[in-house]
Structures are given as C-alpha cells and as structure tokens.
Amino acid sequence: MRSDGVIEDYALGGAMAVLFYAEPTRTYDLDVFVILPASDQPIVSLTPIYAWLRARGFEAHAEHVLIHGVPVQFMPAYNELVEEAIAAARDHDYDDVTVRVCPPEHLIALALQAVAASGGSGRTNCSRRRTSTAHCLTRS
Image (cartoon, rainbow, N blue to C red; front, side, top):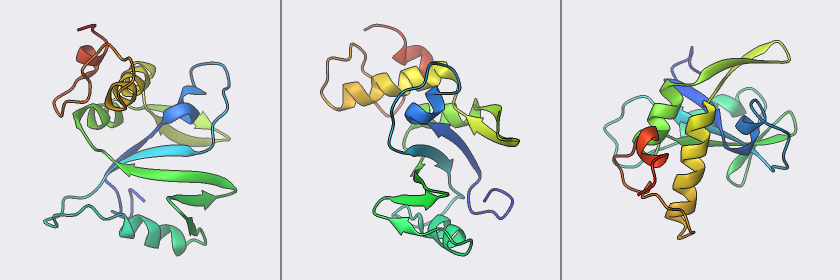
C-alpha cells in the first residue's frame, strides 16, 4: 500500500502488536494505524484502502477486512499520539515479512488514552488532541 501511494505510513497497534513484546493474549483483530495521503476533503475516506485490498481478493466484513482469515481494522491516525506511534514504529520480522509495530511505550500510552476516553479510571488526561507519550505516561 505504501509503494502504491494508498497510505503514507503504518504501524500495527492494539493487542496484536503487544504480542511482539509480551506474553500472548486473546484478541479478535489486528489494528493497523495508517497515515493517509493529504486530502482537501472534509471527511476521511478509507475507500482507497478497501479498493486496493479488494483488487487483491480481500473483502470487507463490517469494519474489518479479512486477510488470510484474520480480521484487520485500518484506522487513520486520529491524534498526535497515534502519529507519534507510527513515526516511532519498529521493524519486526513475522514469517519472513517485515512489519512495522508501535513501540511498547506507545502501546501503553494508547491503552491509557483509550481508558481515559471511555470514562474509565485512567489517571491521565490523554484524550486531549495534543498528547505525547511522555504526557500519557506521567500521572496527573
């Protein structure tokens, strides 16, 4: 997708990404954070991603695309923390394929951000637009 200009960059996130750093855990899908090419449209569209995948035989099912039996969810970078996580992504080998994975400190910060945004008992204020890893890992 990067070489075809469909996305500018990407990184694996969520529980599946944690598997590169920690013990296995149960998860339903693979989250892929993406930086999309600049657009003058007011609404973010994933249509180019779905079209690219459809041309290669992968079909959408609800908010996922089944890729070799794995539900994959593509999510545009929705704040500065996700953008930072993608930029800091590390290359890992998975079955002789290089994949970019968010670093563990960003995965922790993103998890804290999700808890805070959902009204959970997170102690940080990571739901603000201007959020860095250091801020999310610092108690407020």
